[in-house]
Length: 335
Image (cartoon, rainbow, N blue to C red; front, top):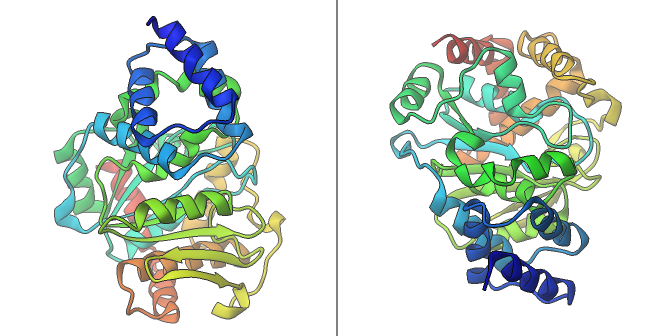
């Protein structure tokens, strides 16, 4: 069967509301990575999962394919954490997860941050770090050096996932969130021992929880009830972990609710970078500071479940206002 006919058969199956098995999903993504399908096929295939929910088997199969095809690095000696969201929430916030990563690194906790250019917002984590002069690498020794000297390394997804190259132009042309947004946080090539993952909807959070429950790593999955893929403090949020599912309101952790406009990220990478630097300089607004510190506190609690929220928040605060987080960024980009 030609690849054209093969994709035609797959699409017809999906258009009839049938689901893919885990092995089928894995094989399709391996074929996509091998550039066996044209752009029209890819766009049609991605669109299916924008029109109906993806299943755990489908997401799990896609994930297995990407992990199998990835350029892997072994950073296991560092007990790292990744702090990453799906993106695609359409909220245009400043780079909360990236800022949180530097605050956590400033506490001494090693961070292996996985990220990419933005697809649906103004500035992704890769856009931000590139604007500061960071050079992407997939060299294991270099990444270990970054962890030793700055407590953080950055894994730019295209450097590690050659499979993504095949879908890059189509994703860019669509400029919409696809199932690849869902996959990003699940395929860190260094397989960190700890992860704080944010999702743009509750359904994806539950899928993540289902997939990650079967593995040995520590994880926390957050979803703000008003649609953010991080703890936004604009509403309550769901937290999924091995211990179960909880609803947490800002008031439950001694925080005030903030407005969506308080965490707006600007209209360009340059504007987002200015906000980023202002916050790292310790000159962010109270709302901006509280959001990144709350996210950092929960990340620290994922690594050490015995740490109270107040203690974790205090350690994060010292990292931000003591200049430690800023120092981590400066060391990373100047190594």
